[in-house]
Length: 170
Image 1 (spheres, rainbow, N blue to C red):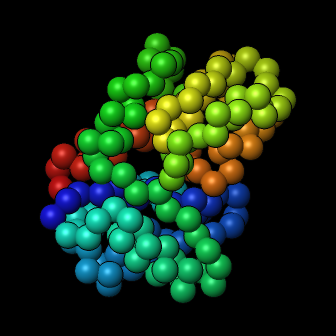
Image 2: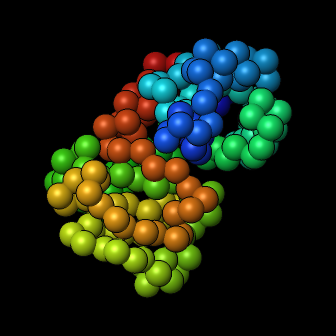
């Protein structure tokens, strides 16, 4: 069995997609996932399963659709994949609460940086299946629009590091 980290999109953010973490844990257990754990109320769940990442993602998204009555996306990574993405962070010297990894299902498009709008002091770099953003002055006042990130989900570096650590404990 493998340990996976699933990052849900648009859960408990901005008043949409309310999903109590206890319900998410129960949902995952109902899918047969084992050692299910959640972290903070923003749609982070760790579990073990014999399913492939693609099959676990499909099962989870199906259950989420049934629960929410609409599609809810999930990005599924192994702890090793997430650790590799964190290690590749080009903004390693940035404050971890001012930098995010935007996780995608596929590599970002080659023109992802050209499509960025309302960039102020943010630094952006492309990864294998991630987009790295460092918000120099912080995220609160940023108006950054990054079209390539619309199907992804972002987590700050503190959260990514905590999820990796938790996966090692499962």
